[in-house]
Length: 313
Image 1 (cartoon, one colour):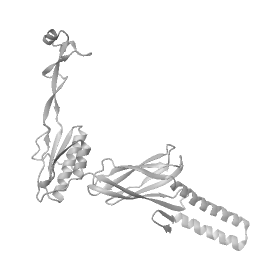
Image 2 (tube, rainbow, N blue to C red):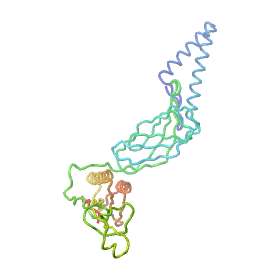
Image 3 (cartoon, rainbow, N blue to C red):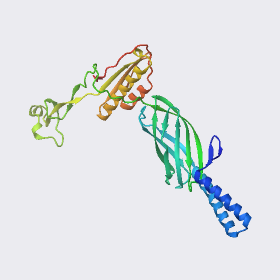
Image 4 (cartoon, rainbow, N blue to C red):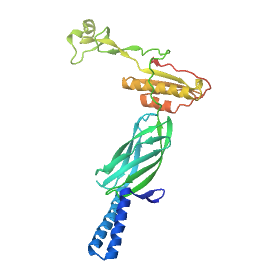
């Protein structure tokens, strides 16, 4: 039973609250008709309990404000976390709040805020699932409570003027594409155990067996041999927006590239993305910048093009 509902506040009776209210009215009617002082006392206690329930639920909604929202890496069609930071002026007040966040293009599972800390800041992580990549707008944050007795449900609505960027779904291909040119390797000067690469001055902890006697004699101070070993190169992705038209094939290609970025991150490999568009060529480095560039990519052509992941040169 909804008592009132406006843009910022809502009050409604729960099922238990409706039964309690009927019982309260019945006790009040019997006490008036019979003049029984005990019934008057029971009616007063029940009425006081009902009023206390409303006052405490109102206090649990006060003193909270949203100070920030961290989206993290939120992928399309994948459950991801949205971290809400709330400013709390209640200093350890019991809240018992359900947090409901509404998005334009997705659903968010409710979160719960019980007792806040005395640091005057609370953090709640909500699990969201968004359908499409790109920017999506946050509508409202609803703080809902039935604290303390479950008789009344009060809600407070916070208007949000914020957008979050949804990354492309990280699709992992079942096999490597035909145009996959491999990971590639390059040699870097490191202290390994393979072929000699060069020399350098002796450092504390170097093995005496690595002393380069000829260079030591030339420089009149100890020098040691350095070695080279192979290290896998980072992955370089290319995306030609002018070769793709809007549609599902373009989205699937973005998802495949997003999956390649995810694999590179799991393997702790460097990655870069070269985007060719009508404005020219743009290159980004790093896992999160590559994901964001793919999330904002728009097809600028009419056909179906292609990309080829390649090793860094």
